[in-house]
Image 1: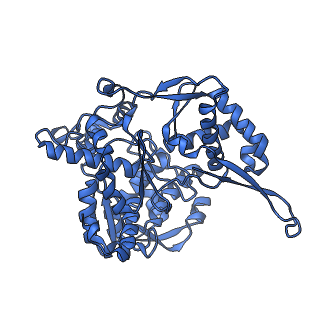
Image 2: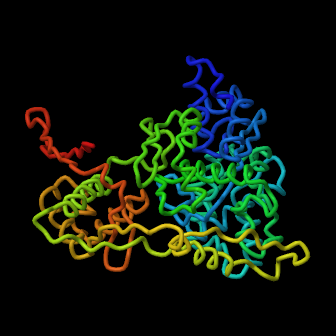
Length: 461
C-alpha cells in the first residue's frame, strides 16, 4: 500500500484527499470547492493505486476533473442525491437530471434554460410515465432542482440571468449557461449500456469473483467487499455477512489499510466493526448532530438502551433481523426496465446474489435482538416532548407522531435499530449512545431582549 510510504507530515494531506474523493465521487475545479481538485491531483498516483488495491475502485484524474468509479455489491435503498436544501430527489427529478445530462451532451458551448427545458420535455414525451410541462410550477421546480445539481458540480455555470426567475415565470425569466463538456462527460459513465441489461444485477459486482478463480483471488475479493461495506455503511455486522466475509471482518488487517487510507479509526466489537469518523468529513450523516430530529434520535437511542437493560421491567422480546429485502428491491428495479429498449443479443442478467438472511442460518446461528414496540416508542417520544418540547422546532412540537417516525428513520439509517412489524429491534451499535444526557441552557435575560431556552444533547460513551 503506497500510503504506508508517505512521510508522516504528509499523511494527513493524503488522507484528506482520500476522504474527499470517497465522499464526492466527482470533483471539478469548483466542486466541492476550489481547493479540492489541486489536492487530488497532488496525490493522484498514490490514490489511484491504493483505491484499486484496497477497494477495487478506479480513479481517473484529468486537468479538469477527478472521477471515482465505485463498485456496487448490493443496492442501497437509502443512497441517492438531494437538493441544496437536503430534500431527497424523487423519480421526477432523477428523470429530469438524466435527460438534462443527455441534452447537454448534444449541445454546444452554451444553452439557455428554456432551450434545455425544451430538449428535456421533448425527450420526456417519448417515455411512458415521464413528462415536463413548463406551464406547471411543480414540473418547473423539479427541473430547476436538477439544473441546480448540475450547476453545483460545474457541468454548467450561469453566464446570465436567473433560474429562479424562470421557475417563477418562464415567459419573463430566463437564464444562460456555459457548458463544461469535460464535466458532462465525466458525470455519466456506466459500466454497461443500459440497453444491455436484463437486470440491475448486471451493475453489481460478482460475489464469487468469477466462476474460475483461485482461492486467493476469491479471498481478496471477499476482503474488498468487506472494506467497501465499511466505507459505505455506518456499521458492518458480522451476522449480515457470508462466512468468507465474516472471516475477513474479524481480521485486523482488513481494517488496518482502511485506517491508513482514510485516517478513520476502526471500532471493533464482537458483533461487528464501524469506522469512526471524528473529522465529520466522510460521513453523509453526522451523529450525534444538531437539530430537533438528531437530538431526539440520540435521546431515543439512550431510552431504548435503558429499557432493554432495566432490571425492574420484564425483559423485552427478542427477534432475529428480518429477512433480507435485497432480492425484493432488485425485482422492483427490474420491473421498471423498459424491455422494448433492451438489445437482446447483448443483454446480461448479472451475477446471482450472494447468501444473506435466511441462507446464513444453516452455517451460523442468527442472533436475536431486543424489540421495543410502537406503543412504547410513541409514549417515550411524548415524554421527551413534554420535558424538552419548548426547545424543539415548532413543527415537531405539534407533531409527536411525525417526530417519532423521523427519529426512528434516522436511527434505522445509521443501523442503530431495525424496523420490524410492530416496533424496532435495538441493534448492538446503539449501545454506544446509552447514558445520553441533556442540559438546558438558559440565555442571560440581561443581554437578550427575547429570553428563550436552547438545549444541548450530549453523548457519554
